[in-house]
Length: 227
Image (cartoon, rainbow, N blue to C red):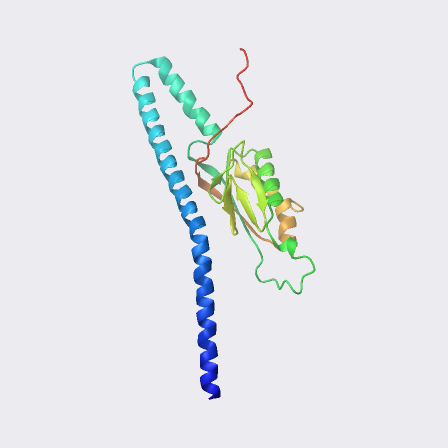
């Protein structure tokens, strides 16, 4: 009798839990559909943007074939796109890898924050790389440009509006012998992070590829001055 009662109670509990989960999923179905719709619109717009860019590039090439001035203008446009981060670039540089120390017991550490990678760490490293002559920088595939935002959103970091999590990989194209010592020197920022408990590695490379900026430049208050 006791066994039968226990089985009945368990069946009722499972049934109630199933109904609760089903109701929750039903309530969230609208949010899911809305998210899928927004994601689909974004993918379609991004595909259309790339198609327009290809058409523009073909038109520019055709215009530059028989005109020296157009050829110079086309070369200038490509150089400007490279500077603005609108094209993939390749060159020598360094790769910095940062990871949180997962071997630390949070119950035994007074301040676990030192073992984590924060947005201010990324901001400092990016500034230090640019100060030491970096021509292009990316963080986990996100190109760093003039309007890039690096923000903390709870327990995650957003770069260019995209979520970025550990492990962090920072690529920088430039003169390795200048950038590496700027960050890895004794008492430098990377050394301080390592001393705090963050896992830090730096390597030099003769061939680094950094992807283009996937966002859109927008200037609401900027206008061209008289020349």
